[in-house]
Length: 420
Ligand SMILES: Cc1cc2nc3c(=O)[nH]c(=O)nc-3n(C[C@H](O)[C@H](O)[C@H](O)COP(=O)(O)OP(=O)(O)OC[C@H]3O[C@@H](n4cnc5c(N)ncnc54)[C@H](O)[C@@H]3O)c2cc1C
Image (cartoon, rainbow, N blue to C red):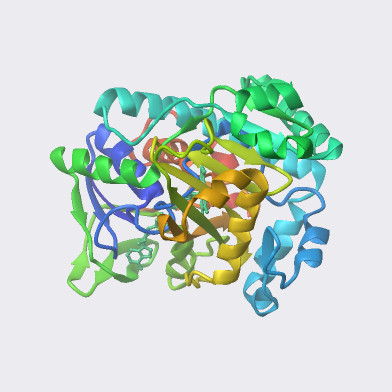
């Protein structure tokens, strides 16, 4: 069997790996000059089963109204985007009830734990370098209310195997001394020792290198105009270089899965949630953090990626497929860094900071989709939103189970398009 995969980001490449392992012939097609150059390039580098709750948490509707049009808000909605978000937006809000949010969090957690074991197996199989380390993550709170919610969220995921320790302020500072300048603002933290860190772009590059050696074909610089169809099936991928034909196809084009799907009557309930990161090149900076941190009051994550780079990432902006880097959002992210690690923010010069933006493919319920479609030889692997690095190995496994056969590792209905 020959499978063509649309998209060489985390979703597409891990699917290529999972299929190749089952002896399937694979071709990966991407418009960019190399792998992982869009949303999978500059993320927060965290693989965090502990923090996979969807962003449409209870109360999100009021937050969005409060933050409407504000550049200094964690989630920014542009009024002009409302028509494009209509049906998706209603479902996004409907899924924010406490009960739905809890159900969706557990779906994500099961996927993330599957992904972790699949990633362990991949690392043993390929022995690739991508700054991977089991660093743990510190989830810091600044108010008693936020701390209580954070502890409640940790207890919710504990029965499925997420271990954690609740730390008071002093214990938090002992774990992360770089927080000392803001000690007075910190209420406490939850420490998840099993979470991991890794450079997603380095992973994509190394994976392509290994998969090429195993016979997977990569067609880079290949812009896909459309999918060609006959009744009930896909007949090829239309590119300027001609038609790429295969027996089966996987649509893993991130946020662009929606327009590619629309063109063939396939509704993909994913919208782009634009995020930003700043990579600080700061080798030897004494104010750099020791471990990854997620600050749930400031809504940002900061990760030391290796001894030389620290990355802060966060914010969501509903701005369609616009990938321009807007200075007010960069300034806002920098102000968040100054609230978390003021000394680090003060001591890194602007020329040592690389800004980046990426479009998170956000599904309406905050759960990724790994699913068959109305075309019998087309599968979908997208909708990973803010947890694509944490869950991509899980959806890749599910898609490979469906295409190549084999008992599904998780209940497929939880990640199917049919839920919409
Ligand atoms: C600021 C930020 C921080 C994040 N932090 C984390 C984190 O710490 N942990 C975590 O788990 N997740 C994180 N994420 C989420 C994660 O990065 C994404 O979920 C993931 O990268 C999505 O991967 P993807 O393969 O679906 O999409 P992409 O990486 O965007 O891949 C899609 C590919 O499809 C190709 N493509 C699209 N259209 C076409 C076309 N017409 N023709 C040819 N090729 C096409 C693109 O070129 C691209 O390479 C973060 C995201 C952002 C933005």
